[in-house]
Length: 550
Image 1 (tube, rainbow, N blue to C red):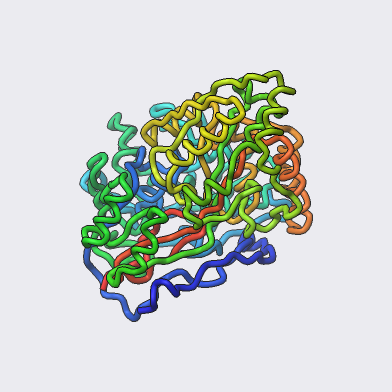
Image 2: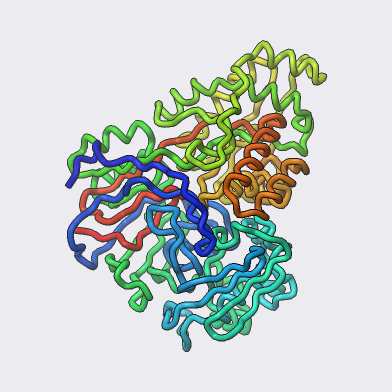
């Protein structure tokens, strides 16, 4: 077993575009897995997770807490990201074709894939094209029978604009599906490798529809993935069994998987050191060195592919005024945040994407920390005596922010120096997201992003685009110049040309300050040393296929 303190760090290296595989845009330079010899099958792995999922229907959510519990355990997608990497590999589709204009995508499906059998559903057929068509039509067609019976929102799909851009999803035969778009999108295959596009069982949905129990799709999930959902006790545990008929059996090595829901990071660390759980999410920076010094524990680490930020709701006064946003931006002491919140395990962020992402604009610099200049800007904006706003702080740890409450207090203190009174607000995690994304109740909000697919559009379009103002665009900012640059970039395949457009978009972002980037956090994974085969993903989240216990 290698010394945990000497495990290789992960790096991200730009790669040339390859249309046939929708392009491998960033590849991992070194594995983050703890390697071992042949893995013994069986055993129970207990994962101490940071919060309760809002549900298990991955199409309805955008956070890794929900994706860990649903998409990563229960479901598969047509195309997948190789574990520990941003490389695209076949999933439920063995191969796919893309038209020259990037408007038509044809997926050739895997044969012999079994849906999970549960107490509430017994499949009578294998996975086929009907399941793909149902999965996407439920999201894009408001007249779909299931959606009419159980209307819900699909925020990630909408953030990408696919509710408008997917013209049709057609079954060509039992194992061939064709997607047709209204406008070209060179990122389409990479996007539908993400969790929101997890494939559902049309047969199960039909059973629920006939029984009048459509809400069970979100509470009693059924998929083709590596683990079968068994039961969920809110704020306590989620239990899974290995899927005995999983199509990729070589990647299932544990018999049972248990999520022990433990919001307190200190308690998660206690459970890990006592052996009550074998893995834990989002350790506090102070716990990293302690874990490295513990002979029973292992630590994986990588440069973080994330950004933490404070967003400004540009639909609320006075945050609709760019001078006000610039004043708030330059009055935040980012170095103090790095020292106190991250304990040095992060780098200062100045752009809405990390430096490891291709197209990162290296020419852009932060406005200097200058409270005096910030006060002048507020006076120019018509607020010489400041104002009061709410500042929302997350109730849970995230990979990009280990302590949102402390971060909020530091920012509150910084803004007080320029006459701005920030009232710190928090809600339970699911409620926090609902109120912010759907209702836009916040003024300023602490949030962040972990890259989902390795493309610049994921950082810019999904969190700042006009299509995302009722979803992950926490600034509720719709700038047509910015949006037009992103739209042009989706039409072309040449990476150099796309880079120039994304660099220009970042200039617009920096000028208009819809949010203040704060930090790129280093990524860590703590586990007991008997866990083998786990890969630290640049995409965040936790996958347990490929993992075994000694």
